[in-house]
Length: 110
Image 1 (cartoon, helix red, strand yellow):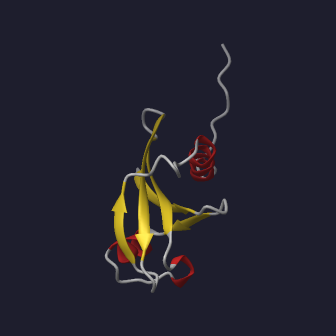
Image 2 (cartoon, one colour):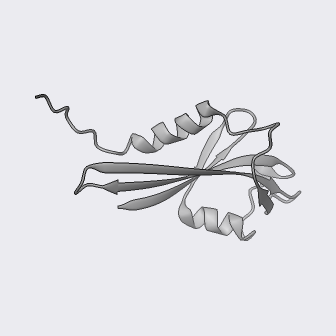
């Protein structure tokens, strides 16, 4: 099973998740987010691959800086800046948020 999750990180410390459909509309400029008008924000995409047959779980992340115009449409994306990086704390918080839905296996004792 594979899933892709989409998050926006705000300078105020907020983390907001968007569905794949919402993220696609935002990226295409078809959906407006007036609360982000005129702002540069950080975006974190997390891909989770859960191979239950082998018991292996893989997580891959990618980050970007995104800009919204005065009407709240995303107009550009690029790498995160050195001035506003995606912090280890934010990265780990998003990973932990996604992992909360993964069933935990009981430990194996030998």
